[in-house]
Length: 149
Image 1 (cartoon, rainbow, N blue to C red):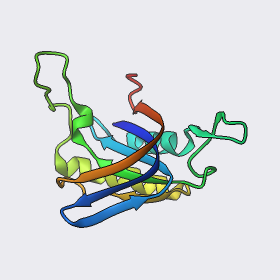
Image 2 (tube, rainbow, N blue to C red):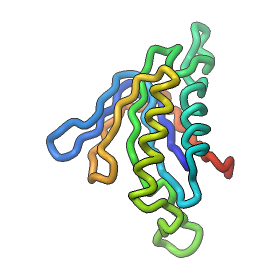
Image 3 (cartoon, helix red, strand yellow):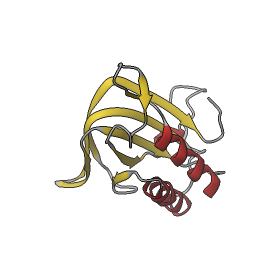
């Protein structure tokens, strides 16, 4: 499971004219589920996101997590995070889990975040979405449950 985590001052995701999820300050997480992912991957990554200290403390150092900073998390499904572009010019998405498997792990990730005390907003899984965000910093972190990077 991979995530692109962005610190934002605001973010929203829409499907057509409907706003599916919106947050003020917090984290925008693009989540991609891999074929080999299991429940443990969702739990590991949710905990990593929850406790990732990338918000400034009173001295301006990145020392606070999203809850300590009073933020929320917007989770957007993005199978393209699993892209492999090492060969040629067109990426392959063979490593991305099929929808039926991926949606349950996406839901598990979101539920685990909520269980850890995070206010969670979501996109609409598998839909064509428009994501709007104002990055803060910018701070963008790549996470992988298999610790590939």
